[in-house]
Length: 443
Image 1 (cartoon, rainbow, N blue to C red):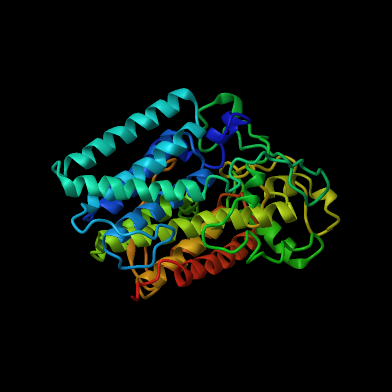
Image 2 (cartoon, one colour):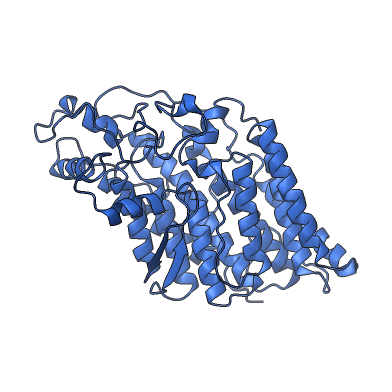
């Protein structure tokens, strides 16, 4: 699976959270399933995987981990591995091997040679440390064997899932359609490569609309109705809101709104995985329930990116920075052009509708609320890169998902409708994931 074309862009766009490790320490009690989520994220980032690719990697890792544990004690329905492990199998060795084997198979597909080597070294060290906690014994050997079986089943199932297809997309320069766009000057957050700082990058992974979903029947199962027409009142409201609140030099954006924009700017797989870890640990979820939760959350997020690509490249709607700078071409007298307008934070190189950041949040929130039996679950989380160290508290998962969506307007990178419809799409995917997959086992 080659990733050579556009490698430099893939490494640095969407969010620059890929510059440093994403995991952030949280004052909770972890188990091995939660720990391997942090490890997998750090390895994927070191490997140069952008958030879209991270979502597929994490879904594969966590579904394999779930199946390995479930083969030892069948508490839930398996995702793909219909096999029973030996009675005395060591769970820690099983999930470590499942995660390690999936990650090791994917690392060669991404990043530079230096990144691949660093990611492999991190993975090898983590795996050795995990195995060292279990004495050499038949249970350890059985754990390695069932973990390897779960990883092999997952890798085989996803071998031809479309992730390696070549893109076939050319931007249209007509009003309302996406085209490459600039970053604010200087880029915020900064990029590691000065040549990429100005922006104007080609569209990222338009072929992702053709990737086989994890929990949906098709990428278009919950396809959205589309963005507002350029002549509509809704478009004018969306236009004026993001122009006012999302500008680099906005005087109306509050300090709290600026903090929200930065807090949620990290990759969705990282942020929502951390939320799952925090709440699972707070609630005392054991290793098997934690593995199931992370599998469902990350499978739903992965499908959010797939469904989002299907919708966004169908409607191909322009980003606010393009719309505002060329408003004199949209045929709407109620929108005023500002040729020098800049977004508060960097705009990822993808069409506007829907906001897949909002889709991912809606999907994860829907899974979390159903898993814990209520949306009204309070939690506190500290952000990761690129704006690490911001701590915020929430009274519910849906509140967090809404703030996650709002952040894209405050950052100046999405219209409101793209964010609200994104939550709707995510909720549909999350509900389906929880209802249709990994249900309690009934012999």
